[in-house]
Amino acid sequence: MKRRLRRIATFFAVMGPGIITANVDNDAGGIATYSIAGARTGYELLWTMIPITIALIIVQEMTARMGVVTGKGLADLIRERYGIRATFFVMVLLLLVNIGNIFAEFSGIRASSEIFGIPSYISVPLGALFVWWLVVKGRYKSVEKVFLVACLFYLSYIISGIIARPSWDDIMSHVLHPTLKLDRGPLFITIGLIGTTIAPWMQFFQQAATVEKGVKLKNYAYSRLDTIIGGIVVSIVASFIIITCGAKLYPMGIHISSAEEAALALEPLAGKYCSILFAFGLLNASLFAASILPLSTAYSVCEAFGWESGVNKRFSQAPTFYALYTGLILLGGAGALIPSVPLIQVMYWSQILNGILLPVVLFCMLSLINNKEVMGEYVNSGALNLISWITIISIVILTFLAVIL
Image 1 (cartoon, rainbow, N blue to C red):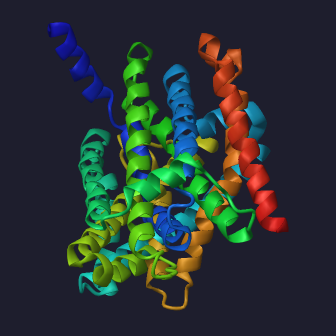
Image 2: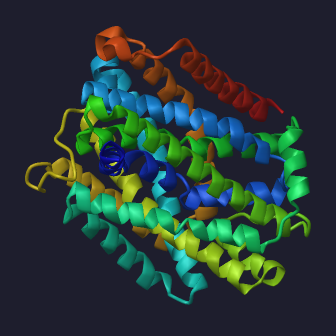
């Protein structure tokens, strides 16, 4: 009994990076992508969440393992392995994609708060101030606790999916008999689903968070469990977003272009509570991710160029880290307040760019994790390498087909 209690206590001590990283994946851009998938294709692409979930867990497990074994972040390892030029190229791509993602988070704050009657010129600055204060004035343990509490609010999407009363027989039929039309629309949506579920920033953030948390190799089994739970939970939530919109918006031919449009369109079809829960989930997700995305970007860039980074460090100890974090928040908040910026397009295409950038990041990861000089006896198994290469090749093929068709 004592041993079991000790194991449970150890898991709760190690828990955090995997669950937080996975749940932030359901950010404003992600919710928009899942909503669009449900509204435009119904349950047709729901089956893709199964292989995507398997790939997500395997990819994130590799990042956690590299963090525990090496004690270094992914960007740091890429610099050591490939040199400064290749690292600079990857960081530029990651920065461009993440800026689009950060715009998406603050536009999500703006849109969801307006649904509740709060003007954007109040909600966006307050949201920016809150996420800045949370990280700059906090320490890793306190920040992590706030993030874990925020994860609980994603249950609102599961509840909204149940309220929508979908046809579970239709859902099972589409899951058990998968199809994918070779048409540009469904192909781009599929790339978006992959890109938003296995976003490149996730690998950098989870590895950096694992290192900063100080997870020891003897406790790695708990870190792996943290990653598995996170991957399963995030995919369940994402599936319920697709189900909600597929149940109510797809049959009516309502082709939404954002998550907030989905929340508003659901009210007359699924009821006020379903719409409110959907909008509340968007607000929570946007605030949550508006903290993590700039943080992940700051971690990655500072690691890549050897600058001090970490939430546990003071501003004077890591000035570039905090300056970059602050600048990205200001940029995201300001961009969300400009009326002429096509935020919906930025949100959607940022997810597709995630899917296009992902093979580059995965290729670097596979090279590192199969290097015995880096990982010792903890290199990948043949099965993990096979699934990883299938993921990379699938994304490249889907992108090629979407472009030429």
